[in-house]
Image (cartoon, chains in turn purple, cyan):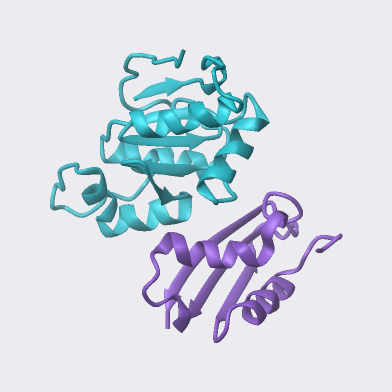
Length: 79
Length: 142
């Protein structure tokens, strides 16, 4: 559980650690440390709806979404 | 488009807000839980999602989650989704702003909503300064 504002690099690492085979690109799009945009590509997304794919990524962060991570905009792809 | 206020639902259950949310989702084919109202969205993500629905001239109900933080809590517990906005169609969570925007651009949203595809492709979403679309009957629960 992060006590301070996460960086885009931290979010990327956490996603890639939690989702096997995932490649993530994370951008802090306001520069303020709390609005992020992530593109996540993973083979394990195959067969899942967009909702399920996004849930898999949100689940990495749990209660931090809406807290220290105020906004995490997602794009997921199978690959 | 109609607005629903789950707070005024009759308290016959132990969790009236959750019950009201469930009923709203069951009673309205297309329902958007958002921050603010379609006329005055209070956040960019909610505004963008409303724009997609309005661009398709879709009929939808809207619930403003801002008046009471319990709405958001109960909704997220129900849908297992952490953020607002949330669009439900036929009782099923379709997604938030990212998914709805993606589906709008691909034409899937028009299909899911059952609205006519003009065949010209989805026009680019713009953020209207004033409200678009007529406000229909206000429907309050309870």
